[in-house]
Amino acid sequence: MVKGFEVIYGDIPLDKIRYGKTLALYAIGSTMTSTIPNISIAGAMPIATLFTPALDVEYVHYGKPVTLDIIPTTPTGIPTPAIITRVSLQLSRTPFIIVNTGSYITPKMPVIDLPSRCVGGRIDVEDALPRGTSKKLFEEARSVGYMLGSATDVVLVGESIPSGTTTAMAILQGLGYNAYNLVSSSMKNNPVDLKRLVANKAIERLKSSRDPFTVNDVAGDPLHISVAGLALGALEAESFVILAGGTQMLAAIALMKAVSPEFRQDRMILATTRWIVMDKGREITSFIKSVAPQMSIVYSYLDFSDASFDGLRAYEEGFVKEGVGAGGTAFLAILKGIEVTDLVKAIYIEYERLVRQGG
Image (cartoon, rainbow, N blue to C red; front, side, top):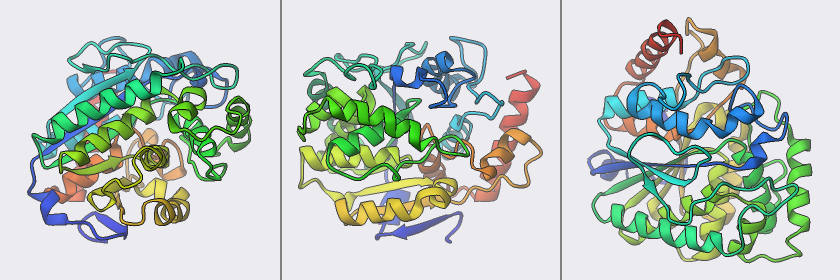
């Protein structure tokens, strides 16, 4: 472990990232798949998951959501990982931009709206997107990634989409990977059987097509294909790219590989949390070694076991684990000089502020 983070695979150009000009992008999107009972806890109830992406980024921007006066939580009150993201951005003074790929609720803040954005369908009973939408989203996001990557040295890409692990599983399966035990969950006990059932129903409609845009139109969502486009565009602009997320980012990497097999893996890093590595570290490393072996993997060493708040200690019990770019944004803050103990202390202070405000 080095100063609050650990590289578990690959060779990261730490100085180039530490001293480079950095911009964080957070893609948000919704899929009606998140309304399937018991498939996601990224909201107090299934329908609330459709509000989560907008509330997450409003909180990151303003310090509180404005669409609804409530901080996104699980049904038992465990707080959104956007708390980690907001504190990390503030301490590292990293600028950020929100990219709306198809959020059910439009955030009340400045964002980049992709022209083809749309909410994803419930993939067990309908296609994820109208045919042809994935290619449009990809190209639009690629343009955004190139434009922003041209103006900076490092582009971090995070995401917020409830039930994204389910659609990620379906995307990976559709592209030919064995993904049933590859993706993590915001729950302590991953509902793998339910996710597999939903993914299989989507895969049946593919009829063996491995075209990445068709796979995403049928079995994916608006976000993962957009993340792939943002990352490829930034790489084409000669920027380093940090994919800030957990197992969902494997779907984005698989889409990148399918669309552009020769993409610059050596300029990409998957950055996540210790909790994801504890859950799926071996599977993530095996996937990266086989699909994008020149990439690197790193995790931030956040530990909430001494927190005074049950909601934060729940992270140590296997709940939430990652989201809204938390692990990657924390890694970036630590790399740029923030001591991990100071970062954790600031997260505790921020959470206490929310509790006092009734968040």
